[in-house]
Image (cartoon, rainbow, N blue to C red):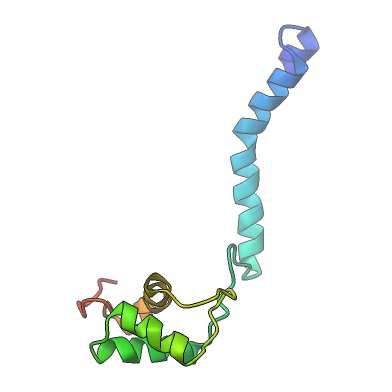
Length: 115
């Protein structure tokens, strides 16, 4: 590609954009591997204490629906992980599902999970 620019057969911007589009994923993967070596995690940080997750799982194991679990968390004024105004059923379910690998069972249906 650089040869095209030097020979004058391609426009500099177009060739650079093509090269960047082809090389960017490889550069990103290499940078991500370097960050992962330092236990760097992308995305939002988990800021809900483990005790809250265990409480959600305990309420769910008693037969409460996700709506009832969220209502209880709101009644107890337990703050959400990202500073939201209130707990929603999907938020409580997501919190519970994030740790299912260590439990070995799905908190929704109780089915055993495959490794």
